[in-house]
Image 1 (cartoon, rainbow, N blue to C red):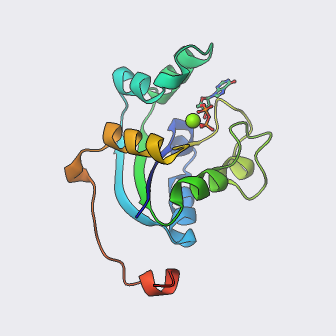
Image 2 (image 1 turned 135 degrees about the vertical axis):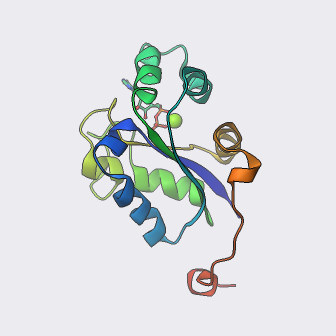
Length: 150
Ligand code: IDP
Ligand code: MG
């Protein structure tokens, strides 16, 4: 089953939106495979955002991610990478559709609340970066026949 890496960023944690965000993924029908509240080191933040290291906003972004705790998660489900990005909404909350997390709760691109992997390969890289094998849980949910046509 496909997995993606989702992170509630420092602004989302500070604004008490952790429960709201988890609720949306649970209600959608995705299954939690990993979850932790953590402080982020500069090294981890720089590795995570490595593809953006030439952008002018990179230093500010890294500083922000390290400024306050985040909630790192792995969610599992059919098409979860693409669907999560749709649930999260456009990078800039001004452009994010109502009903999306950024569209409903954000007003600034540098305070857009949540990260979600942008492709399956990115998800695999990010999950390995943020979680050890032992922190990821494989489990059976009794809901499967009600979520999927098996
Ligand atoms: P994404 O989070 O929607 O995948 P990316 O382009 O991967 O967007 O950028 C990563 C993060 O960097 C964004 O979520 C946002 O917090 C921040 N960011 C992106 N573009 C800007 C910008 O123009 N100014 C400030 N921060 C930005
Ligand atoms: Mg991205």
